[in-house]
Image 1 (cartoon, rainbow, N blue to C red):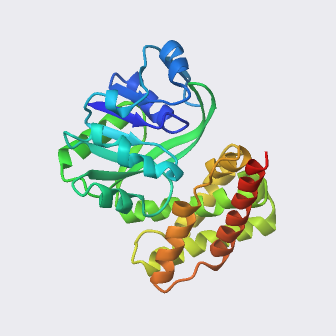
Image 2: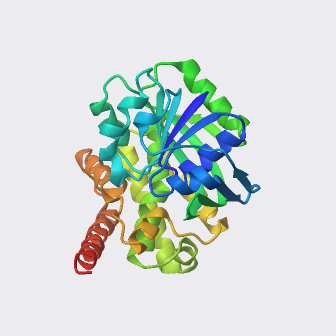
Amino acid sequence: MRYAVIGTGAIGGFYGGRLMRAGNEVNFLLHTDYEYVKENGLQIDSCDGSFHLDNVKAFRSTEDMPEVDVVLVCLKSTREHLLKEMLPPLIKNNPLVVLIQNGIGLEDDLQALFPELQIAAGLAFICSGKVGPGHIDHQCYGSINIGNFSCRDASLMEHFLEELKAAGIEANPVEYLEARWKKAVWNMPFNGMTVALNTTTNKLLENPSTRQLIRDQMMEVVGASRALGVKGVDEAFVEKMIQMTDEMTPYKPSMKLDYDFHRPMEIDYLYSKGIRQAREAGYTMHKLEMLEQELRFLEECNRLHEANG
């Protein structure tokens, strides 16, 4: 199948790169890296085996990209508004659009813009970072769960999963809401806490106080999902996520990197929308609401710092 990657960073560069290495046609949308990647290709340093890709199909605009079967959206959710202009040139033949993004409510908002669009959620469990132009550093993990939101073409979804697996990516079909809220079990505590306490994932779990706080926040996500009628998100999954993080390489999540580099943080989709949905269902995420408020404060401090030079 033919692919388009919107957002060739830590996530899009890795998954798109693996698909391209497996022989698929992959078209990459780039911004600041365009000239570099066009001339030098993509370098993927990976714990599973590093590789370099030459002759990358690089584009500056979706208007110049060919029609594809699958669009992988790997933009930060702070740039979600750009999809209104980016997607139309790519969706004329009704492809599958997979949102490999963090947060709650992304698919609902995109469907409202494009009612006929076939959408799936991509929930990546991966430690990966962009360390230079056209240069991705994949540290550990790399599996991805695919939740069907509104794809009507079962064969298209099945073929997509098969090609991910053929590219050496562990990929599994999952129930959409369960997948989104399971990802939130990890994302909501670790992304915000590494920012608020200026630390890394391992240090949060090495300290007994913050380890307990992380677990409490994870259980709030479990409580919210139960209030919303989502099945499969339970205490056993919380313990699995804590164990997984104990075993992973010390890591700065994407929100921590955004904060450090004075970029907007994904507070709306990672926190606000999920917290609001839980409240509407009668459940209050007290500790995560406090974390959200702390992040809003830090975001404003960053904004003022940038405005004042």
